[in-house]
Structure formats: C-alpha cells, structure tokens
Length: 235
Image 1 (cartoon, rainbow, N blue to C red):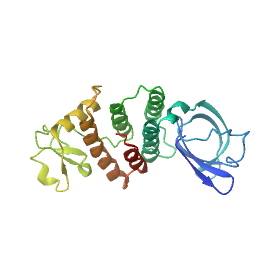
Image 2 (tube, rainbow, N blue to C red):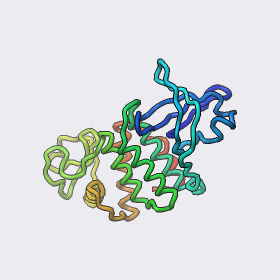
Image 3 (cartoon, helix red, strand yellow):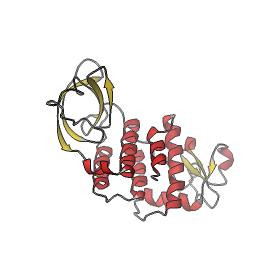
Image 4 (cartoon, helix red, strand yellow):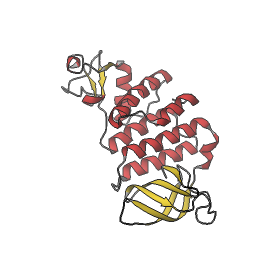
C-alpha cells in the first residue's frame, strides 16, 4: 500500500500499488473504527492481499485485506522510515492508474525487504530511484551526451528538460542546465549500468541533488518526503 487519506469520521481512501493492475484507489468504509475487517493493516508500506469490488468509477471498494508482510521492523528507525516513505511516494507519483508495472512492483517490495533487514545501504536508494525511473519511462541519461551522443567530457551540464547530462559543446543549447561534476555523472552512469560500487557521502549528496531536480521537473513539484529526509539527515 502506498498511502492513505482519512475520509469523514470513520473511512479511509487508500492508494494501492498492485502487481496485476498497477496503481488503484480504494474506499475502505469504517477503516478507522473496524478492528475486525482491517485490524490496523492499512499502513503505508504494508504488503497486502486485498479483496476489491469494482464499480462504475475509478475508485474501488476495499472489503478485506490479509497482511503478507508489514515491514514493521523498519519503523523503529527514522532514517529507514524516511527512505521507505520516499520510495512509496516516488512510486505513487510516477506510476499510473490501472497500468501494471511488475518490475517496479517487485523492485519496491525487494527494496523495502532489504531496508527492513538492514541490508540496504545509502547507495541502494539511489539505485532504486534510477531503476524506478527506468521502469516508468522517465530514465535520465548520464552517458553519453543526451543531445549529441558524444562523451560528456570534463564540463558536463545537467538539464532535465533535455533528458539528462549534456557535453560542453551542447551546453549552449541548454541555457538552463546546471554544472555537474564529472565524477558525479560518472558514478551515476556506472550505477545505472548495474555496477554496485558504494558511493562516498559527498557523491551521494550531489547525486541526490540531480535526481531531485530531475524528478521535480517531470512531476512539476518536489516530493514532500524529500524534505522529511533532509530533516532526518538521511541521504
């Protein structure tokens, strides 16, 4: 489950991410009061089996759930909570209603599992972001140049509108691009290509700046969970 919103005095509207049907909205009548039907299972990040009834509109009715995995152990650490909330919000915003995306579903479930087991290092969050963007068609390009296809060189610029990193020769065509350090561009390109080498903290911070900029450009806003991560001090 990706998120919940209280509705009225007793109900909730939940946003589900399903393997078979993509993102769905569901109305859970009495969810805030019924201990028998939902038993506190409607928490963001919980892996569920859900019984849904479809109607004439876009919102289904949620009748019953069974918990497959709650990931409750990651909820005792603010840094892990921040990373989990970020991944859930990212998937909610870049996925689409009623469009299955099994690779993204599996990547999210796997990452939450690693996070709960304390096996997900800081670099793995950046890898998850890159994979999520690829699975939804938003993948930024870090190598070669997004415009001419040549190496990005030692003075690259990053421009979300043109798909990623451009070389110095093409930088005149992207007046709103920002300078990007070559070592950051190289690290992101390697991670995107599948290399699992951990990044130093400084490279992670600069990488996250570029990815936050890219995601905010395509969504039209900054993800709310980014601010929470910054407050917690999580990169």
